[in-house]
Image (cartoon, rainbow, N blue to C red; front, side, top):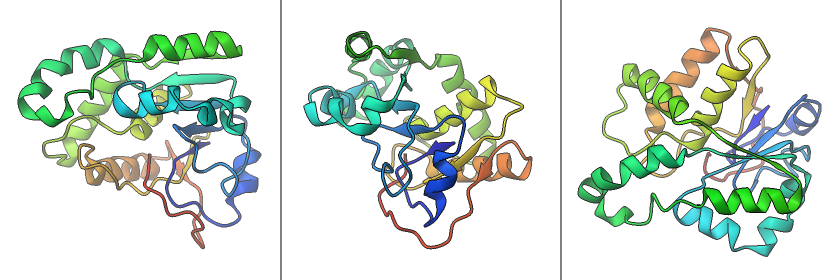
Length: 207
């Protein structure tokens, strides 16, 4: 079960908590109304989001982060080191976007007895390739949510992979319209399942 930070249907909490593995994102805004089980917290391990999480005692001690046995860094440092120079030309306002905090997440995991996983840059590149067929237009990087979906499709190709809390909206550096088309394709092929949505009770932006 991959739980984004977007709208989650009333009644989905039970299904989320009954899953064999639950992945949440960053500050885990889905926690509570979207169930409590949290096995993995996937984080943006570069730039301002990473700095904000690591500097926050509230994040470090929050129930979902405390419950998680693994932290997944969605951004391979090698990939983002290679992106720094081209982004300095195309998006100079993102001057700290590629600042890497992977080592600090590793240290946090060691201190708290968690496993730290860095999603390999090959997953990012496979996601870029898959998006290319869905008219993404210019974008900076895929969302962490899509990178995690891509990673789990590789790791667990025969499992039931369900998603909820994905509104496919948010920062304009992510190609959200193309991401929705790609996820819809995965759903039509039976590779991913969307949890049935009825009355939305959360309204934050997607992962």
